[in-house]
Amino acid sequence: MKKWTTGLTAALSLGLILSGCGNNDGGNNAASSAAASPSASNAASPSASPAGDGAASLEPVKLKWYYVQFGVPQDQQAVSEAFNEMTKKLINTTVELVPIDGGDYENKLNTIVAANDDYDLVWTSSWLFKYGDNVNKGAFMEITDEMLDKYAPTIKASFSEIAWNDVKVKGKRYAIPNFQTFTKTPGFVIQKRFVDKYNFDTGKVKTYADLEPLLAQIKQNEPGVTPFAMNKDQTRLSEAYGMQWLGGVDYRLSDPFTAIDLLQTEEYKTHVKLMKSWHDKGYTNADAATVADLKPLLASGNAAVVQDFTLAPGSEAGRKADFGGNEVVYVPIAEPTFTGVTPTMNAINYNSKHADRALMLLELLNTNADLFNLLTFGIEGKHYNKVADNTIKIVENGGYSNNAGWIFGNVTNGYLLEGQPADTWERVKKLNEEATVPALSGFNFNSENVKAEMANMDALFKEYSPGLETGTIDPDKYLPTYAEKMKKVGSETVLQEKQKQIDEWAKANGKK
Image (spheres, helix red, strand yellow):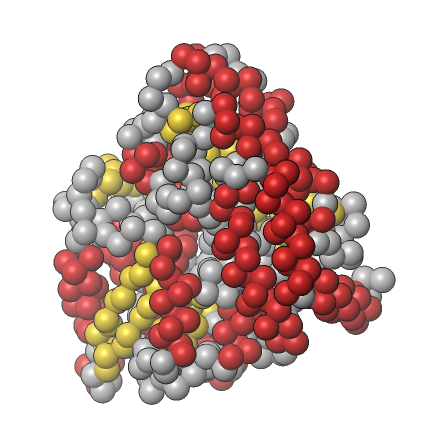
């Protein structure tokens, strides 16, 4: 993700069950994408643990793992204890699981890294606790082919060369991607009851403005319901304006090799003005610019529409629970696009003393369905109940509403939620193979030469973006100020550096 969508999207739009998380947002025809897809349709199947029956011969080790959550589960301790019973038996390893809420994750992990904290594993991505930046800081250990061959062979085989190339920085690999949907299908999630009640034609929705007839009817006729829910980390769906965000740069789909300064575009101005009008009409929640977590509002059933960067195949069933038990419909506004594997990965601390065991743990989470499902869904009979061999129903208020397997490992090892199609995982693999590959796929901006400018720009982003993108502040007054301040701290220098790198990459890869 570039930043976050709604609080739900941050947690779940990475499709709740299997999102790419990523709204790092194209491209060429689908015919070429099958050969270029990283999945090669080969998700790992559950198998024996890396240590097999030899776990008892391994020296006991304790790992520490930081990872993101969007609301830390109440029963985290109970799940941690059960998880450690399994990992000790399988690889003679216990794990201090340290989930950190998404709203605090970036700041806390930056502090942890700066303090040289003693940990082993950490979740990282292209959009939060940014992978490339941390590689440049020297925070992560290089993961060599030899290490993968010895401790995580199934993971190595699960991804194609193109996928592994997506992970590499300056030719080296510093993280393990989680197998999930490597695609992005941006759009909106709408409660089905409102679509039906107002006979709303979702097929005509291609932009934000196309939602207005429905939002107006909900505002007029549904007291207590927020027509369009947002949080402070809301950013626009670029495709609604003929744009894309990928590899750290914004560009127009019509000109993918030219980086643009978003704040200088008419498209951005149009969007924030529309959001201001929605705010003034009462279509959005009044606290949008300050609220971090939309889960309570969504769970009440009183949010009609949210946006989503990754409408993942088969994930509607999971979203029903998040919308207070109300069915939802997905409204895509663009074709699926391959966005790479960097939106959700796990890295090893550069000075971990147990890199071998850390890799063995990740291998387990990609091969052992029982372990993966425990961390993803909790304890059977307490947090969920089986309704079929591979289908479960979450216990309402059960205390472990995690359901974010995309953080931990291979989602195709996961249970299906009640209502999910039986072929969900096959659809995920197929989509990975067939999604359009953007022209800039494989490009990743290296901010090392402009890190001071980027830090100052990020501070300004946090100051102005929440108000502008939620329509809380007047764009006529604040957008010019925001854009001018960005120039003063070096936005033009950053744009020039991005363009330079795109030109070099395009030439080196035969794109120009």
